[in-house]
Amino acid sequence: MGEAPMWSVLVLPALLAVGAFAAVVFDTALEARAAGRALSVSAVVIAPLRAVVRLLITQRRTTTAADAVLWRTGVVLLPVIAVLAALVVPLGGVAVADLGVGVVWFNAMEILAWAAVWMAGWGPNAALSLVGGYRFVAQGLAYELPHMFALITAATGAGTLRIGGIVEAQSGLWFVVWMPVAFVVYLLSAMAMAFWGPFDSPLGRDLAGGAAGELSGVDRLVFLGGRWLLLVVSVAMAVPLFLGGGSGPWLPGWMWTVLKTAAVLGVVVWVGRRFPTVRMERFAEFAWVVLVPLTILQALVVALVVLIR
Image (cartoon, rainbow, N blue to C red):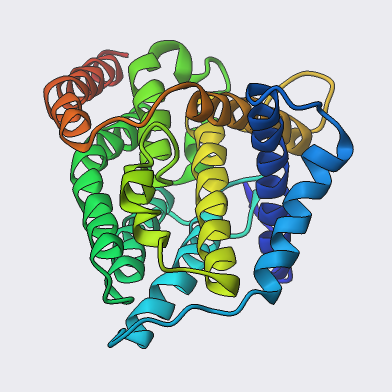
């Protein structure tokens, strides 16, 4: 797999923003349909743009004795993390950076999301926002270990931590065929990482918005935009890890990558709208009792296959 020219670093955020906006439009359509409203261009496409403009002109909220530096750093950090994680995600046969430790880099950027959401929750010096931030940290303790085992399983199957190498190892058979557990667990953990439904309790209504409850104006736009970017990047990474990257007949590789990412992203957004929020302690129990043993078993099976072949 080749590396894209340096100027592609400037294009990458725009590509992610397009993907995030497409996901927002699809989510808005699902919401309108569930509410029984008519699906029109105005309701599905214009409404999100109108919401963006409204946030841009809304005054930023301030709270008493807030830690402004911690607060704003957490807000800005979330979209930055998403862009940094996307550096190693290939589009067709090229990536901005095809690092030899691409899997480790991607996981390291994801983990920084813990700090970003916690800081955004702590900074305002508000009780409900603080609880939302700590909820995300607790959620991270539940999803991160299964998530790491899913990443390790794909890397073990390919014998490399390089994302390009993992794609090349799937030239004969996509990993999703013989690593279905790792694929499903990866998607579940990606949804939890982006605190997308049903793992959206850090922004729960019972907390009046949780970690984002004290955010308004540009701060809210950047934070929630970063959340969408993180969801898009996490889902996009499932394509090179388990779905053969840009491989496919007739169409160019980059188009296959886009189509596969759009399909998986559509399923993830639909699931988020379809299921209610999972209580934190139940998700933690499910992760440690079910997901961790399943991913360990999947990793052992893959390791045995690699040793035997």
